[in-house]
Length: 271
Image (tube, rainbow, N blue to C red; front, side, top):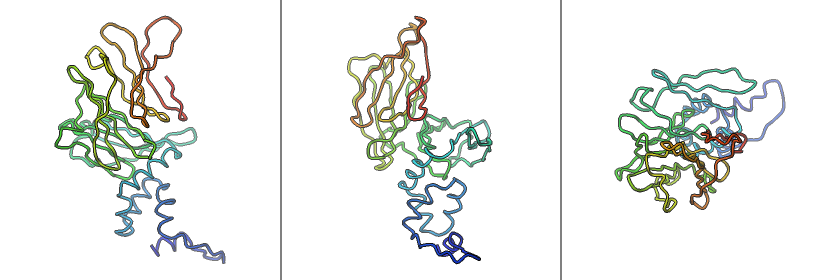
């Protein structure tokens, strides 16, 4: 701590004196705003810093500040994984990272992302994990009750933030006759069951679901009737009331059924 303060407040030839910020202010206001490399170095300062930076609360703070920072692009290839900064005035600089799981990069599926936080699935065991590649933090959210296991071609996932600033994972599992919905809390590390729309047929293989797109107070999924080339609808999950609703897909003007991807740009939903 003294060494860091000396670096921050060294006046050299100047007689200007700065106030002592204290460890609480440094932990809550300074460290969460640092780039990933600086956060990684800060973990080596002392055991106290290592413990704080590795905590759930710090991970959440760092993710929130990522909204205001230059965009981070996470890419996983066949043999490598890297993070790059993207933006109008930024050079695309790639930073290689080491996967915290004992699998090949090609065996990691990115299911959803939000503010630099990723929800991924390991192909060998189909386990779901929450991973922050910027600070090398990772937790396995699957458990002995079969929660947190992803089934390809039928399940969809979305990351969102509720009104209490808790990062959550919404896992929609389509069965033979039903749609089961579970929500995982990053804060409590527990799953809870959520009711889905009644008397709907979105569980069948005739419907194709997109991953969830979080925007303001809603998590949005597009659902397309594939086999009959039928209607496309948007399913909205209200993150505060934890209820689902249906929204008509925007009219494209040519009279044809059109599929589209949902994107959050400047906290507004675009197709």
